[in-house]
Length: 417
Image (cartoon, rainbow, N blue to C red; front, side, top):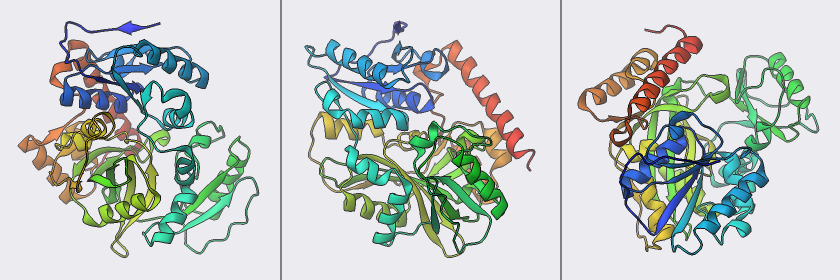
């Protein structure tokens, strides 16, 4: 079934069209980004009739039942590709989740006749998306990362590490972990004792997850210790764009813990240099997204993980004046030669939580005041608050979304300040 909504909007015609897979704030951020840059109407395919995409008048929305099944997704993409075969319009397909991206990468031979696919090949994906492999490369390059012990779930490896509790425990393969079910499942665990760790690992072993779990030293510091970094590497594997951000707040819902929801864009030469060394060493192409944490014990920035796609909070780049859509179009659609590297320097506040949440829950006084200053100066953006798309339904949706954010922070962090 297909839901088409144009609501008399006028769109600019181009020789390409983005096909976006997903229905959450990531997908909507990309819809806005492409509309801002090119005035076009992306095609969005997903399996939800609600949320920011379903209410948007900037998209052609195609609802597809059972899209979570690989064959349904592939059949849908091939069918759309065939619609455009004789039009001369290039389709640029973008996945807004790890599962979508993996399917696109694993099926490049099938999909490449119809789509430009802005992702690395499968061999490199498997080498770096499993975090144990990622940390091995960081170690080889001398890039700082947390002390890590690799526990093999299948073999029940004896626990033997020399860093103290509390520790962080998380899966080495997020895609495999997505399907695992067990009591107390979380995206990331922070554990205060060996007994707690052993209990978690017993529960993991009882599930379908049979790869490795990482036990890591806990890096002290609040959410404001985190940094994000977005890079774009061109088709030659050279980094052409880098944009760092200083996290103000992360989500604290167990299923989404660690996802940034408020970021101030700011330059950071050290993490840009380390990420560039990593990416160019492995021959990476396309967008990458890094999670990094400042370690106050030694002043280092420690790399936690890489995402082989734009992150959920990718709009922090566009909001600061560096539209991410333009890099893909210039490189993959226009085949423009690129020289040098653009490093983002503009200061801007990105947030999808209301001002009240930032004023109440940012623990660092200086960072909180800095955010309040950016609010006062009008140098802030919420990806879902976009004038061309602010219908009454969207205004109501945004108000309800912000109220829900207040409730979630109150539930998981309690009353602060």
